[in-house]
Image 1 (cartoon, one colour):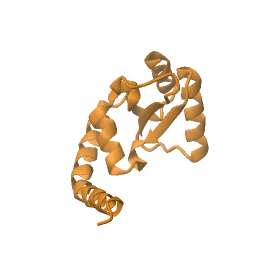
Image 2 (image 1 turned 90 degrees about the vertical axis):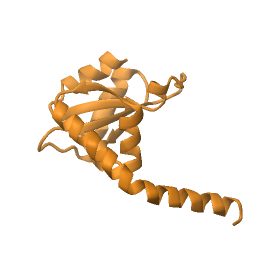
Image 3 (image 1 turned 180 degrees about the horizontal axis):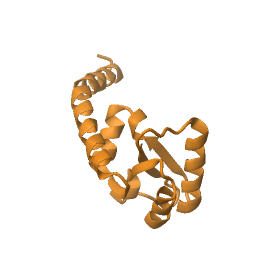
Length: 130
């Protein structure tokens, strides 16, 4: 499946790098699991909603299963961080862009983590009736 996904990325010059993450990497995938894919866009390129949907369709056809596609530059800090922390790069056209975005994801998450923890404590307190 990785080679099939990689061939889609190689054919699209707008893609700077791609990672898979989630159950596909942790070994917890089952027959109905989707494939979580995070991508970085090269240079001045952008993907509108239609182009993103078309790319997701090509990836699904290549993978033979549903693909959950994430644009890393638009992802919330926690999701981007976890994609880099737990994922693995399956395609790299621009290694500098990949390293730069990874560093930015870590820094953004470290800034965001206290807010995330505060929200989690609030949810737990509400659940427990405190």
